[in-house]
Length: 245
Ligand SMILES: [Zn+2]
Image (cartoon, rainbow, N blue to C red; front, side):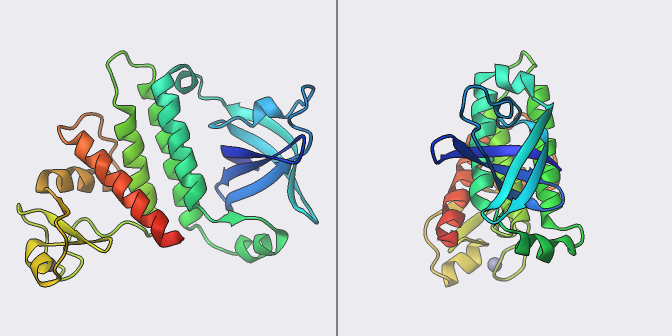
């Protein structure tokens, strides 16, 4: 199968467990045996954020990688320290939030599924890497952390963790210039915030507008409210992480 390498974790003395993002199955965790030995031919093809062709077999202990060949190495991202940092941070985010497919039972269970959320996340990640690769070469200073935050927001939305950013989650009315308030990972209007006794955490209308633009599928390169949007993305990521635990 073809997969984005999201990350890896050392296991046993010479092995490594890789998180692979595939179009068909979502996240698959597979072990590469002896990959940390110096003579290993696999290792170079399994670095994040490579897109690689990977052969896996089902064993009694889960998936095992038998062959790998890099297809896309994202050379410009790898040469740009800030871009690489943002990409690896974002792949770590996906790795945490995506449920892993570990055994053949789940494999059989899932192959019957139609094009679903796995594919949407796969498409988002490919699109994000393509844009980061493009921006990494440009001379003007790109705010890579802002692009990462946009991927986090869209990823959280696809995975069902992000509240609706278009209308009040309580009364359903469109947000006005008075902005939105956060109440238990829900976004509510100012009137509902009062009746729900929501805390003082608010999102200004301008920031909300930028987030709505991001949700429509646009990568926003520059925005006056980039820092505030990034803070929002990090806030929702932390909140969602708590929800998962
Ligand atoms: Zn409301």
